[in-house]
Length: 494
Ligand code: GLY
Ligand code: MN
Ligand code: MN
Image (cartoon, rainbow, N blue to C red):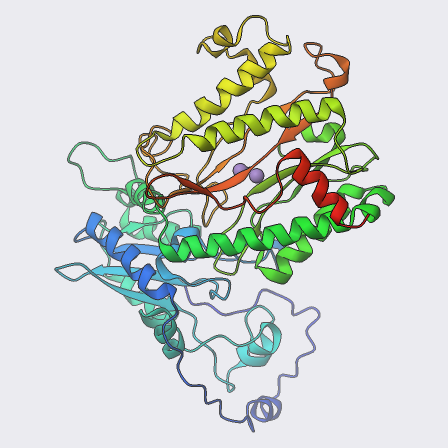
């Protein structure tokens, strides 16, 4: 499990192998004396989250791996990102050591937690200088067990000690199965299929599926630290949108202007955060009608509306998810403005009802009433708005096939394994953060709409925090009304 053998690169390795060299490179290094860090602010929040999951699964060992890096090709990996459940329960952010595993062991009254990770290798090891994947000379040093223990406020142990722990497990262990599939397979082989299995039956012991569900539901209500991080993510995203607008001349000049938009936004994401929270959508002209257009290889033409759906993920992995649809030449045409204002009305109507006690699905229903009414008024529907809103009709959904809201947090589509009754049918509570993102998309070959509407796609997406008595739009500072948007572009000095 704690294998540190590098993947084969022996056909091009030039590393000297003599003991003389090994002795030499392992010697004459200054001692590193670093004071132990104070616990990070998030440590107390992560402890409370662990207490929450502990309470739900008394007497069960809970294993939450960070996971392994995915191979891109040969010895090159995709950037590593730990499983979000691991990030949530540890508070460890973008400096997480690959392959770490959190183990919560029942202690009679709750659980003891130990974080297993590959501690830093000594300078006398071959790994130190000769392992391109994890060696200090190649990818930088790792923290010590003591440093991480102090930083995160959990007991730590070397990953090499995990084997002995796993040997002592029985089939009642609960594991986050999709985090580290090799580790899960080793559990299954050792303990049989009882580890995973079917969803909980009445009175039956919890399964891994139940653990995954509970970990998702634990994230439905954000704590103060998470809200702070989401605010940071939104602020960095605003800066990214500012950068893109300031770059519009270059965007218009390049044959793949959408890529310039993506590059400019993503530069801000890397500079101010960890990366983007999802692939940036830069969709100009009729590409805006393709909901998740991430190819971004199109030109941006004068007069286009460009739909930009982008979010910065900060170092703690919380991400924004924001869409603005912008007239690249600075002003909306009459038809573009009509569509834009309809979408804005839907977004504002949905936001206006958000407060604790409503159900999540009411947000979508409210936005859809506006979308149905507007498209009926314009004569696009085969009937009235009321007829269209009947469950069996839903004609207006031709122009907006997606939902209006999803939870937001460590994942852009957060809490994905929460039960339906906790999610779409769940009751909205203070501390929840979700998007409101209605849109209207008139495909370029849609014969149900007049020609001047075809090829127009508009989405307006904001990140909403539920407060004690209402809601706060975290992204209200990013211009969103037509006049604010036009002013924003004008101020960019183009
Ligand atoms: N950016 C994907 C979404 O809005 O859900
Ligand atoms: Mn979204
Ligand atoms: Mn989005």
